[in-house]
Image 1: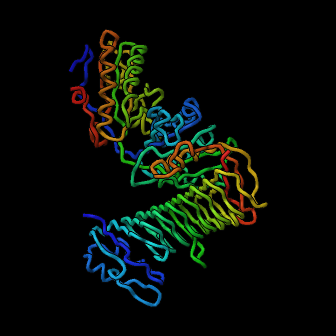
Image 2 (image 1 turned 30 degrees about the vertical axis):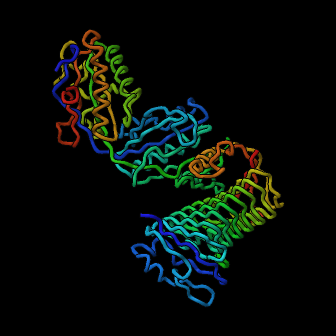
Image 3 (image 1 turned 90 degrees about the vertical axis):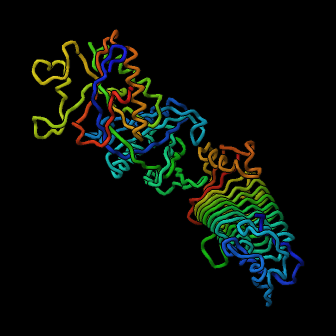
Length: 270
Length: 298
């Protein structure tokens, strides 16, 4: 049984809500039934077979081809199964995902992996702001799972992050780890201003020295036993994080944000 | 049955269901991992008064431990899950948390989880940090030598305690030498511990006592100095008896350990003063697990 493949026929002018096309919703459906599903696009509702050529029948492995940056909510609340996106994705990619795996070959827009609960999200390109964050007005972002970004991330990475791990091979924008409640964010590249702004707990793991606010206090240089275990957990990833030479256990530890609870930490490779 | 001049009695060891857990202690080097492990499994020879039976299962090389440092696997056995959890937590808190450079990890998977570092984290006074790594929850507790890293929980499994055999010899040095050989062989068997000092107990007990306050007392039938004044189980040439007690995860594990131990004793043979192998039981009415010596050695 080959993967259910949805190949975009044309790029609609309005944004498209892709949230109905998740593995658990399509289970047991025939391609004709899937084609009849309607997707909201601006004020219109478009049938799936209007937008996509449909081939394959394995609804637990969905491939979206020719994807572009107006396809929003791909993999929203996915609960098991896998989605591969060939191309870019719009906003809210993998929002509230419960389990399963989503991989995207291009870039993702705003709020990728926001409020993600469990599972694995891999973005080969760049992501927009609020990666793994909370929706506006909500107080809790990603609650578990793993997000890997091979490119750069926008601002407010892990805003209100509660639990789980975000790995960024490239750079992260301003306010990375803002208002973090707990969890781990690792950035191999550069970070912007206001790193860890108002973070309560959690770990920001950095390969390069950051520009830190005055509300982060230096706790000295330390060898931490949990770091080799953390890196060991990344060994199976298709990522630079899996590279043994990227691992370290000696860090400069900064505690903060002292303007908030101050139980968070910024660990910088020494 | 006679092996190398040693008589194997037609009797059985009687054992009981217990609850068990395993933990892995690591440290900067094997010396300190062993120090922590010895402390944690100290005063844990018998559930009669220690609350649990515990011992070192084996040492672990760095590639066998979660954090890549030298380690030791220890096992704790208790009569119930509640008692086991209490003993584990108390011992981990007093003996491993306190031991320099140590870290503590789960050593057995089970659906039933009992706290390992879950509550020890409060020693961190609010500065403790949780980390979920590969689906497992760990606690980093700040301590004076750096950080104490501990897994939150470990598994609890059904197990068996009280497998045993007695070594009857012509002299005390010969009984001890035979038991030492047995322990060396039994340490190679996984999933078992021999909880008594050095694995050997010289004061085997019987149920009950002439003193009402005591529920166990010396096993006079196997005391060589009482041969003339009690209903003895010893022939005239026996001058010393020592016992090895085995706790294990399954009946097969205890079978293997008993076979290895008895074989090592029999290898010394009658020439080294070893006359008989026997076992302790309560008539078969108390414990559901019976380890028949002759069946094990068949």
